[in-house]
Image (cartoon, rainbow, N blue to C red):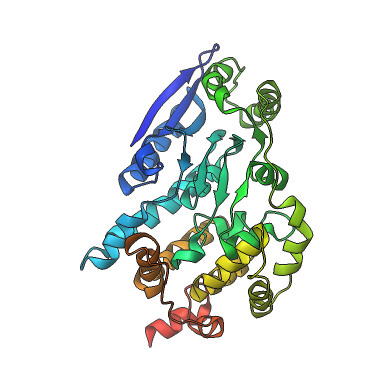
Length: 361
């Protein structure tokens, strides 16, 4: 499930190691895994010998494909079990928030599928290495959810409208795009993972955040240079200005029309438009409203808002229906309610002040 260990540096400092260890299910996170990671992070934070944390994963196919969506579906369809879903989202979001604000450096080694909550875990690390086979996405629009784990802020911080496009369409980016956009900080050969522990052990840790961050910045660049790998052809760089043109502006209905118009063409951009057109209108509305609210509130408030919104989705039909269509019956034909964006925007949503008023009437 999750393995914990440590690397002893030459000066006696410890680097805690956290390894997702469920490769058969692409290291998808369960509630038990999340709770174990939270407890270990608390212990490492309190331990003065521990100066940093390394997050990695077992297997070769995925760093982490997200949360255990099938378990969440079971919680939605089994009477009296919704609290299981509530606890998972509450604790998963807290885990990423905790890592993002961890007082010691966190290094992530990403590879393969880095999806949904897996990208949340990866993005929360302060220093992010990647291998050439990485594919990153927040595909929640296709299952009636929303890009969560703080993505209402960090995903939309990617440049030139990329984050907004990825949120609305669920499109994947590769390692070249991740480097160019700042989603990753260094690209290294997959075989270099065997050298990583020794390299971290050789560093001169002081346990002083500014020094250790600066040291890691220099080390990461040098490690990537010493372990080069061919960079895949980018998806986004060639479409950068088109992406910005598609999702620019301050009206979702205008963006919706542009994305629908471009859904019938070929290529990475058009596939994303088609995924948006097939996705949940309620998800699109949530993505838009949450990104607006994220610009106005701090990380603690965003944590609370995304948690409340996830609990709403567990009770709103689109999440259950999206998982049914994609993972349970696999018919690829979700019946979204409402089926039109205008109707989705008109309904009260947790990220709008009118939601609580409507809920109390």
